[in-house]
Image (cartoon, rainbow, N blue to C red; front, side, top):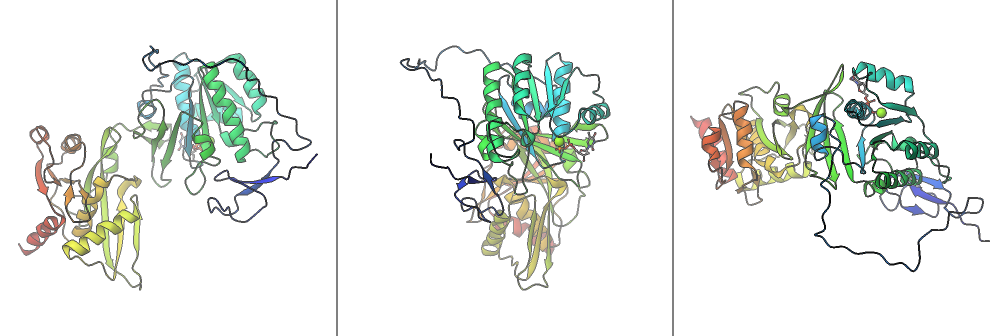
Length: 462
Ligand code: TYD
Ligand code: MG
């Protein structure tokens, strides 16, 4: 019999290599290759022959058939339920990823306990903490009375046996990386183990109608370890993120087969666990002062919800040959673009100047609608002149220097008005319709970026 050589599998992208190398050729990750014993090597138990039934075709159906409307496991934590698309769908598998220590276990323990209190059968299996540790956390969260079934276990075999016997409504596995199955020779936490365990659990979820939540740690570069291989298997991927320096945490939907993916849930980590923040704008605008230069308030959308944040810019003379461009909370490529448009179309030079851009509060903005707010903050800092008080700004900037309309203008203006903003700077042609009167914001429409700069110049001459 030919001896099969061991393979080296990249723990970041899952690609297999014939020999060890310091760097994975496929994804470029350093020190990510780990030796694994292949499935059919001698000395390994042969895998069971597949039991596909021959001679029987499959049945086809059409799109019109009547299906039951989706039921949901509603935790009552509104921020969590919304990100899931209205609650966890029974029989679905969900992956909750995030940096270690960000609060994944806390969030899922709270959600699981809430469901248990709503008379659902819920099992929480921790491979990272002992039962006592989970208990003391539950006590801290004021949820010790919840009828939750706890276990501390990492071996998949016994877990699956118990789950098949219990058939709970929800099972939380904390964390995916601690699970191992003896059907594989690879060490726990390796891609092969994570993949095999996740596959078994998702299959179990579908077959028995139990919702399975897998908690996964994220590697430094923002990927869930062993991740790509799990992401496609599960029905939903939620990412729990935040800044250690700040108390708030954001739950973001990345993938959802049963709902929208652009929703966020905002929480605040406190003494008694995670508290929901139903009005995130007030949190992100906390400490934002009127009349400071280099500051603009952006009315953004996170999913269906408008969220106001402060964009801060600082332009300072640079002692360096190559000036610094430092960005927190926004895309650095997009900042370079806005600066290039300001230079080329409006004659504002950034040569020999350091440029710093910060989205206050630690929120990460990805919308192009923030272009105009970034430009306004930059121009305000360049002219050392503040924007008119109580003004929100949004609009996308084209390379030609024109400002484009963005979606959901009415919702953005409404939120701004709710928080006491009275002026808005938006694109010309923006159809704010009736909302102009609804929101009672005075709207300054700007067609070109040069108009915005001209406005600052005119104010300076006054
Ligand atoms: P945890 O849920 O253990 O993080 P993860 O599972 O993502 O690794 O959260 C750990 C952090 O949360 C820890 O640093 C302490 C903090 N924390 C609080 O501030 N308040 C609380 O009530 C709890 C339970 C945790
Ligand atoms: Mg944890």
